[in-house]
Amino acid sequence: MIGIALRFLPEKDKAPVIIASGSGFIGQRIIEIAQKEKIPIIKDEKLAASMSSLPLGTEIPENLYLAVAGIFSFIFQLENHKNENYPDPDKAIG
Image 1 (spheres, rainbow, N blue to C red):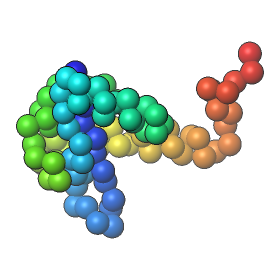
Image 2: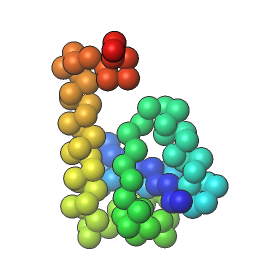
Image 3: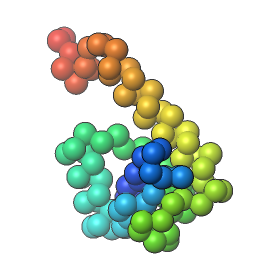
Image 4: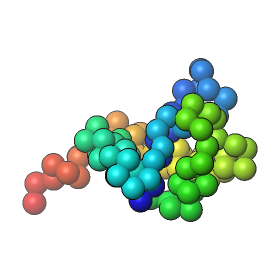
């Protein structure tokens, strides 16, 4: 299992930056920490594998912009949805 964590601060970064990366136990720990902190997790093994060899602290290469932009777009839509006072599905009364 590969875990990759990205940061993107438009005022600071030209492109998303790899802030954590690992496989096996380390990859699992990255995912567990993201779950604990309620950070959205997207499973894309091919994309994770293509980023896993990149050094920490580097921006993703241009050939990955489109794939990562799609992920960030999805996450931003989730965040906007949460902020529109919709009920939290994790706390739904059933």
